[in-house]
Amino acid sequence: MSAAYDPSPSSETDKRPNLRVMTSRRVAIILFNLGGPDTPEAVRPFLFNLFNDPAIIGLPQPFRFLLAQLISRSREKLAQANYAEMGGGSPILPETLKQAAALEAEISKRVANVSFKCFVAMRYWKPLVKDAAKAAAAWGATDAILLPLYPQYSSTTTASSLRAWAQASDLPGATICCYPAGGAFAQAHADAILNAWRAGGSPEKVRVLFSAHGLPERVIQRGDPYQWQVEQSVAAVRKLLPAAWEYRTCYQSRVGPMKWIGPSTEDEIHAAAQAQTGVIVSPIAFVSEHVETLVELDIEYAQRAHELGLPYYLRAPALGAAPRFIDALADLTERALAQPGKLCSEQGERLCPGTHKLCPHRSA
Image (cartoon, rainbow, N blue to C red):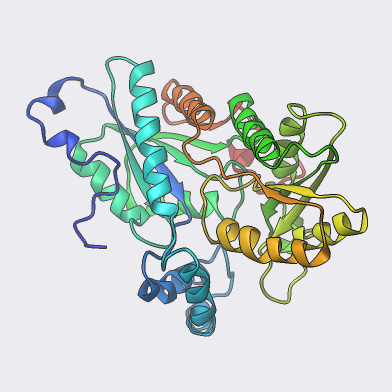
């Protein structure tokens, strides 16, 4: 990707004359996500950036740097093979740009006398957070709305992106920390699950596996609210699905020797085989397709389900630019727009119980 890349969905639009003088308030909507390598050559630097993040590996420097170098080298070939299954690179940037374009169009219809522009800010690969900050400044943003594409807050994802933004920009703005159980968000997941069920022949015996990215158990023990928020997401979606169905919450993508939160998605596939029931897998914490969904869920776990003889293995898609999900993001944007400089959850105030000490509202 060239250095001149503009991390916004509609960079040509603002080259038209006189557009910049239509309104005085110009709001940059910053969409944060993980990012992913776009070529095989980008795999190692992407992995290095990931593991050199103190939110991922808490060692002091230079030890974290050295460990990140070691891990990125040792995992490069396996990761390249996984990305080769997707054509050589991650689809997360094209998907995020589609979400950005859809949100920009929706919020512009809802709110008059304000100019909006979405900028994509990836944490570990281009366009990086600093690239989005520069692009927003060049556009002439008067303020920003920081909108992580992580519905469930974690110190390892949302907090890391927000710290990177604080280092890259002094643009004033509102921050949306989490939206695990909002109505439009939950309905978007329910729609995806029901559509997958119908496409799979509407089987009578159904077990839904809500699969979220896992975390080391020690992260949760420090007060990270991620697991609690995943459970709130599951509870909200379950209310919109048939009561007779079975439901399980599980976690995927474990790496390293540490104990991770569970049960694992693979263990739940084994349990379904013992119960002689098929499964519908819902990637409850993912809003874009990437290696964890297209390879881990669609290839690795699907093959395991076939080997175990599950009656069926269906997978609901990630939310992508589904209209209900874009509505959810627009709702959040409207809330933040009315509260400049504030930290907002989907309800405005703190969502998490007081035991979750890493909730960003702890000092708000």
